[in-house]
Length: 86
Image: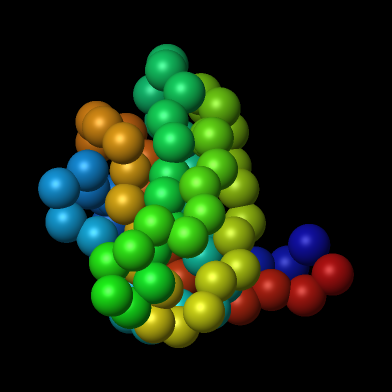
């Protein structure tokens, strides 16, 4: 898989959601030792989906532009907007 980075990596926050600059595809990397749950919220802040991110792992996630991400706790999940092709 070829990944093109479209922005600056940021730490995913448990207290403030982010659309990751209205990205459609994002790369999440977990650099800690505990699992975390990442929640996807719609434009009204309503939780619509979630996914568990295992420790020391990476996930490529597709979302709607207006959807935001929020982590359950900690500061060891980083996120960046990307484009990709197989």
